[in-house]
Length: 99
Image (cartoon, rainbow, N blue to C red; front, side, top):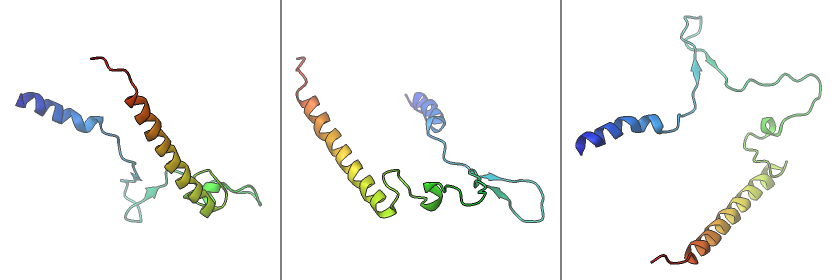
């Protein structure tokens, strides 16, 4: 039994999600460490359209106003999870007995 658990224990870390990575240069350069960005900024020519993610990094897609966007996100998730719990619990409660 213990040998089975040790084999599962070695395989468990491989199944966990990989955390986000940063790419760090290992070359010898003038500076001590060079870090590259995963998302490079877009080059703007003139007064083009600005992405909502650039103006507000916490943009959730509900509204262009940051306060209203956060409020709508919280309300939407609260009611979405509440409805899922109530309807899911009711569905499970009314399942027929197989006994």
